[in-house]
Each structure stands twice: as structure tokens, then as C-alpha cells.
Image 1: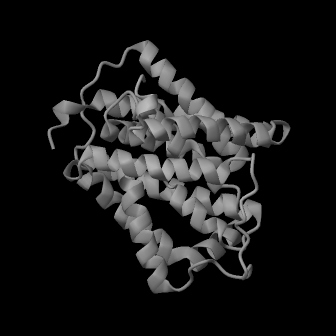
Image 2: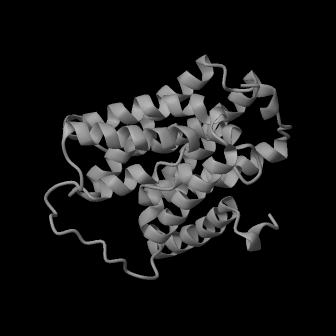
Length: 267
């Protein structure tokens, strides 16, 4: 791909605004265990090319999940790896592939898919109406077994690789009977580990348009880590209802804009 098309002027103000976006998105992530990748990438995609938005957010995803990944004990991490290894391996491989094939898929198609996934997530996380999502078998995940997990992880990873949006991974883990701390930790491990590999894959593969852009992406880890820390430390004092309400409203507007909904084209 011609990375020259990804060049953009990064002024101090631009970097500061992106840093503020990452800080707020990471507070949501730290307090609720979800949100940073979709909020940061989807918002950036309104103003930057999708591939550049994806690349800028990868180190931030790592930073916002450091503390979440560390929230599990070594024994719990071992349990998580044993139970979900086919899913984790498939997501890892497919998400790196997704980074490199993003140029081969029409942007409009990716944005449509991104918008639909984001809209589904916004509806799923909204606190206004209780959705009848209770399952008849609370003792197992919706899909179990090595083969099905590998297939599911491959599909999830490809989408994640192209868009940074991993809500499908979160939604799947939500169907598993996991305690909240274990769920948050597993999400943290998946998003932390996978994105470390994705960053090195993108850097080695020459996907970053310049060393400056790569440096900016790394600097943006600071507000992402700080936001996650604030979210974890003080998240219980924040209104989770308020956070979910705000996130669902913002993501609904953004997703409609990505889908191309005509009333939101003034952005």
C-alpha cells in the first residue's frame, strides 16, 4: 500500500485532542472493562483515514489494558489460557492478517461493517431498556470446543485487525459464566497480548507512514494508561448508568455517521 496517502499534519493541538479522547475512552475502559478500542478508533475514523485511526490506537489499547490484564492472579491467567487458548490463538493470528488486508477491502464496506457492529454494541450496552438476553444454559459459553472457538476467533480477529473493534469478542465472553473480575481480566489479557503483537507486526511490516506517527502513537499510551488507572481506581464512584448512557448515545451517533445515515452527514 502507498503509505503516503496516510500522511497527516499532527500539530501539538491535534495530538493533545487525541490524547484527551484516549484519556476519556480509557476511563470508560477502566471503570467498565470495555470501550477504549471502539470509542477511540471509531471517533478518530470520523476525521482520519480508517487505517491511520487503527494504527494510532493500537499502543493505546495496550496501555489501557495493562492494569486490566494484571488484575488476574497467575493461577487465574493459567485458567484463562487453558480454557480460551483456541480463541486467543485464532484472534492473534487473524488480527495481524486483518491489519495487512485492510487496503484490499473497500473502505466504504469496512466503515459500513464498523458502523453496524458499533450500533449493535451501543444497543447492547445502553442502560435504558432491559434486553431479554438471559440464556437457558448458564454453565457454559454459547459456543464451546476447540474447532468452533478457532473458527469464531478467526472471524473475530479479522474484524478486530481491520478496525480495532473487539466488541464481538466481549459479547462472546459475556455469554460465558465468568465472574466480573475474571471476565475483565480475560478481556484485558486478550486485548493486551494481541495488540502488543499487532503493534510489532505493523511496525515491522512498514504500515506506519513515518517514525513520527509511530512515535506519536507510542506517546498516546500515556493518556490511555492514565485514563485506565483513573477508571479502575475511581470507577466505583462514577455512575455506571451515566457512563453507559453517554457511551451508548455517542456511539449510536457515530455509528450512524459511519453507516452513512443521511441526517448525520454534517460531521
